[in-house]
Length: 298
Image (tube, rainbow, N blue to C red; front, side):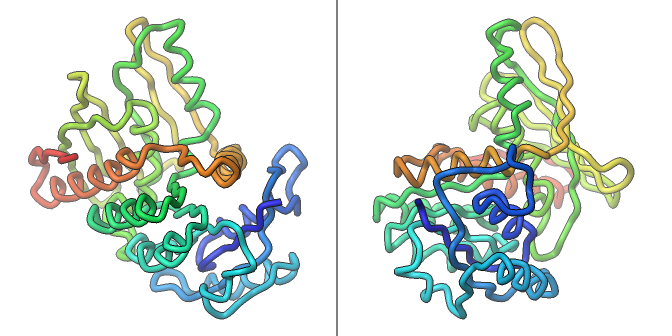
């Protein structure tokens, strides 16, 4: 059994992941096998520190050993999940575990800057440490359904994605909730995005992105009205809409994480993980300049 440690408790993911890995307070259909959360470091937060006591109590009641410092986890765990909400803190938090060779999951957003994203990948490669970062939306079953439909409808040419896009100063621009929609675009279309234009107003924003196949795709971030996620996939032979409720993503993400720990093979190409942050940087730069086209270097 793989022993998993959690670092920083300012997100509901620490509870959701523990429930599924440790088979607590969720239906059996949500159980994930092969790993268990055994220890955690509640840490601190520059975004939502008020959440930490509640999740700390929850995990304590689940029987999870709690430590004061991340370094205290060494010797107790075989893999780690960095759960800080703030992308800017992830390099600092992940570094010692990457250097120690422990399989590492970094929750979304992977990083606040491309420089930090590249630094984490470099550490993983230097120390031969498997590393992954992902929104749970990547592993929603309907994403796979849409990709598999290419066998019937021809190539997936483009997509129009929508989703919640709340803003938070701790994760600027698309890094907060908008990162889910960005991840959906990259899951559907791959990492060959060339340029993006972005318009941002108080209640919403829209990104129009040009991909390497010459087609345009859009991301609509919603901050007013109905909360939800979905997309329309445009194939050579028709268009198919999908609504996503998000219920299955945690379970499927954790299955992939456990497999990575077992095989020590990263499930997502590192270049794609970094390019997602490149997209965010480019989109935010475009929004700051009233929608000018910004190239995505990669």
